[in-house]
Image 1 (tube, rainbow, N blue to C red):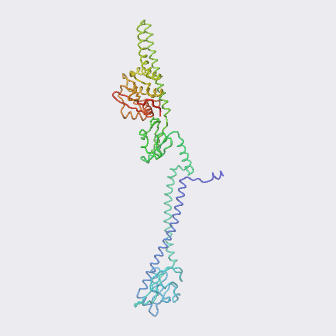
Image 2 (cartoon, rainbow, N blue to C red; image 1 turned 45 degrees about the vertical axis):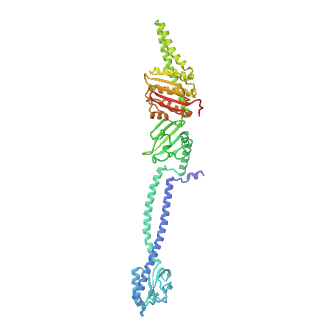
Image 3 (cartoon, rainbow, N blue to C red; image 1 turned 120 degrees about the vertical axis):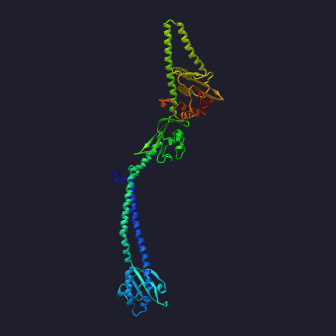
Length: 524
């Protein structure tokens, strides 16, 4: 059985289409030829009826015919005339007869004087008619008409006819021309079908129907099994629906169950420029988007967009970035503390003990004052983060302060969320403020809602920059690594605000980023 299967012919789709086209062309050619010959036969019969009728009537109405019929020897007068007319008009016979069927003329002289075989009743009643009849010369199409004298008395009949053999010869003379035309037409049609077969072979890669079916099934199975969302747009129809949309893409982007247009995508994903691991916000999800062109042999044929869900991972990265920032700040603070201790030791060695005590006391009082201020206003982790951020910012020439009466504890954020929110906002503000700038952190209840505000001396963000920052990873500083959290703070906070039913806004004069959340809300 396996050997039989291996030995079977498995033609490609293009070959099957070509064979089917050739078979169809042959059927059409044969049927068309038969139909043409049949039509030609009918046309020839109609022409024969018209010609025989015209010849019979012409002879029957000629005065010489009536005179000959009333003469003593009608055959002597009529035979030469009917033979000449038959030869000139292509008739096989012209019979002039008496009303009792007695022949005066015939193509075969031996049959003159015999009785005419055929129908004459209608002619005897004064009609001219045609019929197909098998007479002495074989099957023929004949016309019969009456002959009257000058007084209107029926004195004879005229019959003119063409045999079937002659009509068949006329049809057969058309057949060679028909065969040539059909063969030329078949050759042209087969040539066109061959060109189509080659093009179809290129388009289907020479695959068999079974291979195409398996390819489609595998393609469909892979699309549905992919953990990434995938959308493919065909450049051949730039304004048309997407050629491919898998289930994960519909889930991640919240797409409807119908053909998807570009306008159905989030605004940040509607373009056709290349994207590489760019973070986008869609609803309450953080997505990593990639988009690239698909090129064929010589031109671009489409665009592929893939999206991956990084919601949970991004939140972890945001927390990790806050912890990393805390560790860096603490390292900077430790380095600064070492410098201060070195200064104290040096003062002691120089005998300036009072100056060393004043210097150490001053630094301790400054740090302890910030800690005491935050002790009741923030979670211990947030307090440690802010103390470190103050030291880190001071190292780059930026003064970070916490507003009097700030309440970082009374908000609805969890400790990890608070670390992410405060760390991202302070980092962004320090970057925006620049050297000799300032940053202020404030939080508390405003109009019945909890508000976290970070102000800085920087120029602030335009509405366009803010909207872009909310929708995707964005940073105004070149070289920042967005994959590890930089440039994504506002996107993460925007998602947090949406999830908690709050708002995230920016203002200028001074530059302010404000996160407002309902008090004591549970995470949706």
